[in-house]
Structures are given as C-alpha cells and as structure tokens.
Length: 57
Image 1: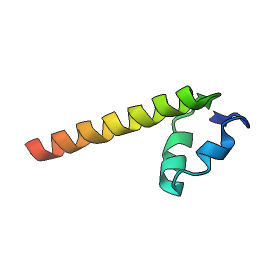
Image 2: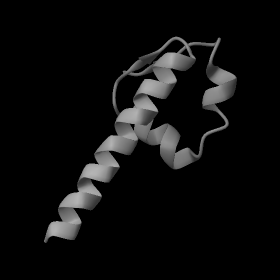
Image 3: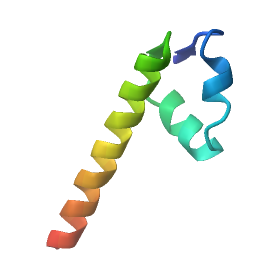
Image 4: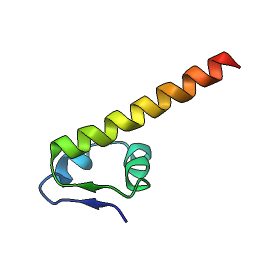
C-alpha cells in the first residue's frame, strides 16, 4: 500500500487524478519532494519506453 507523507500531501494533491492513481498503484512511500519526483520520473521513463516500442511495431 502506498503512503504519502502529510508534509508532501499538498503537492501530491495538485496532480491529476490519473497521475495520482498511477503513483498509488505502485505501492511506494513518498516522504518528501525528492521521492515524488523519483516516482514521476519512473512513470515518464516507462511511458517513453512504451511509446518507443509502439513505434517499432
């Protein structure tokens, strides 16, 4: 189960519903802005990889 620290909750809440759901589905712990950035970076990299694979087909 994912955890978002109250210290970062206000930043987390500014994200779209789809993005928040994608983050929470990863079962991560977000304690600070760096944790949030790392998760967002991972999501972007995965989306880019999927897009690259789709273009190869």
